[in-house]
View 1 (cartoon, one colour):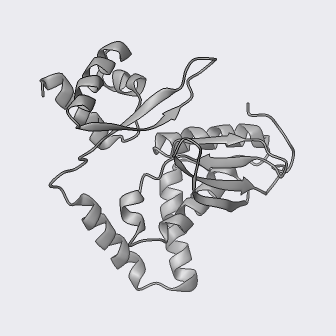
View 2: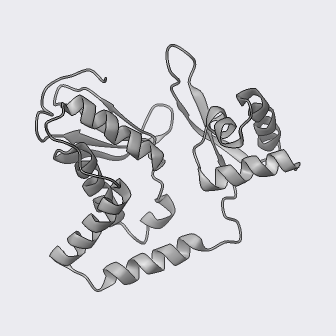
Length: 213
């Protein structure tokens, strides 16, 4: 593994589900250069393709990559799991819900969305924040109203021992969208083999059918 490939692996360890353009931006090089490194890393079995993301316009979807050995020899996920269990373990009912909501507020960052803004604007801003947190989010119109779709769980290694994180995601979406949400699908397998979580946006003017902005 050459120094450039090591840098690619370092970025992937911090940002799983990255595309070649994502990596190129982080490493200040070209996507073509990154693709050459990824091809070699794929051949060596060090990275894997985990999905696709549609690019802008009519271009072909871009592949999403992750390291096959993220954090090898490291135990951050165990430490985080123990800290989370310790923080939530003594709390029940309303107190636990308050602590999960607090985590959601921290992840949301900044101010709450202005409910005077149209739902399309709020959802667009929510998707931007969610993708900054590696959720691979998007929203789309449906007969029952807008739907927020999460294509990746950044906390998947913590979920088995901490299922409460799904409630945190719910609180995070409501805070970012400025509207009530109801989960309609959890880890649903798509035709491409990906797993997604889907939330129906219910509050405010979310019931109006609007195309994505």
